[in-house]
Length: 221
Ligand code: AP5
Image (cartoon, rainbow, N blue to C red; front, side):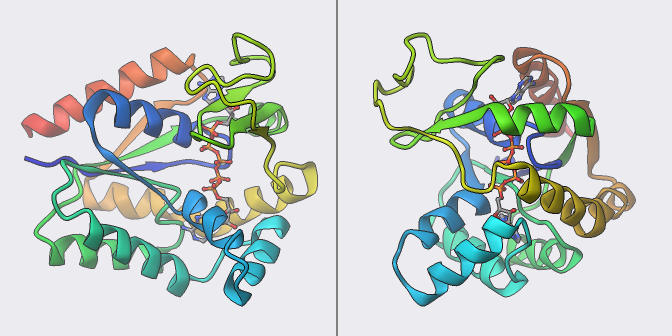
């Protein structure tokens, strides 16, 4: 039995933080289109340069590119015990494509978890975030600092980075894109009967507990 879920929420809602926990605790595969695109932007290709410009402005990359990335990943993880879609889908066209891709591989979507956080909290989260350039662990200046300043708790690397799009101008545009193009997916998945909502303002462990409860419920449905 596989479990496939979408983590849906605005920038800074905690999608990546919770996805990493599910990978550790349940062995699921995290498919983050943001991480894939950040890898593509460092490739030195013309496509990578264009993707970097779009991301730094806070706009969405084209449906065609991200759907292609997800298709490749589903193909190369055929035996996965379950997928966490983190930051995908972000448009109705992407949601339709995901339904078709999953159906084509005999999988189904078990739950779409909307993480609700108010805009003021998002600004604080995004402006305080840093990540490990080696293992991808996510930290925050105030709510989740490293135990030893400048060193990743998870892998010991000192390569701690801030994202180019984690500034106020890009964040404003990313939020606008979310409300215009991604928030309609809440109604779409509600209509399909797949939607669950968690309070993303709760503490990280509490959010994780609520998501675990939803997954356990979905597994027995
Ligand atoms: P992407 O990388 O997906 O970024 P995002 O959606 O903006 O989300 P973030 O990664 O910023 O936030 P998150 O929800 O993962 O929060 P996190 O766990 O880090 O996309 C980046 C760009 O790529 C897009 O703008 C677009 O250009 C492009 N793109 C990506 N996917 C695309 C697609 N499908 N289609 C088109 N374009 C696409 O947490 C944030 C901070 O808060 C951290 O510091 C963390 O420690 C802290 N925190 C987390 N949870 C809590 C909590 N409960 N309490 C207190 N602090 C918390």
